[in-house]
Amino acid sequence: MEKRGNKTALLVVDVQVAPFIWKDYGGPELYRGGELIGTLSGLMKRAREAGAPVIYIRHTEEPGTPRGEGGPIWHVHPEIAPLPGDPALNKSHADPFLGTGLHELLQELGVGRLVITGVQTEYCVDTACRSAFGLGYRVTLVTDGHTTFDSEVLKAEQIIAHHHTVLGGLFAELREAGEVQFAAS
Image (spheres, helix red, strand yellow):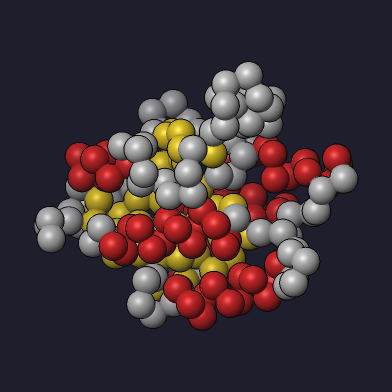
């Protein structure tokens, strides 16, 4: 296994306009969406103050579609939009490491620990935790820094609690946003 650096990075997975507006078009409402933006804003501020990179992952569909690159609902939520110099990578799979160059970027930056946040808990957030762990990164999942929608079987709150049980301990250290510390080097 490759040696990882000591730096911590904040990974923001798929916090784009789309999940926040689906309710306006007959879809489900994102659980605690407004709270998520506030939590992420605070984490980003602290990460930047510590000199830790904030890296954005954007789910990207076919060109010319609303969720295609540059489409109206593809952009990162405007309240937490990337600052100049923040890496923003596009993905077309649940795995933010698959074909995105994320692993190479993290190696280049000397990152050994990822603080993971985002949307949707049971898809891309879960996959990010498992893939990062499998690649040898130390993973912190921010328990109040990810969310999802109610499903036909479970409420969003239950899905989130289940994933904390499944991911916590083996794949990720679980921490609330206020407990997360960033190490720039």
